[in-house]
Image (cartoon, rainbow, N blue to C red; front, side, top):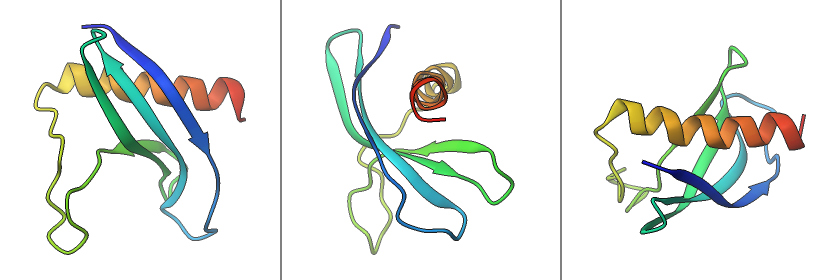
Length: 87
C-alpha cells in the first residue's frame, strides 16, 4: 500500500512531554485520505503518531489501523518528513 504525505503542519505548543510537534494528512493508495494525524515527541525523545479522535471525552478513534505494517509505514512517512525538513 502506498502512503503519501499530503500536508504537514509543524508547530510547538508545549514544553512538557509528550508534546505535539505537528499535524499531518496522508493519502493511502490515492484512495483514502486521513486528516489530522498528530506527531508527538515522547518524554524519552522518541517520535510517535496518534490517529484522529472522534470525541475528546470518550477518546474513540475515527481511524483505527489494525495492520501494524501499514501503521509503521504511515509513521515512517511523517517522521522522515519531520526529520528532513524541520530538524
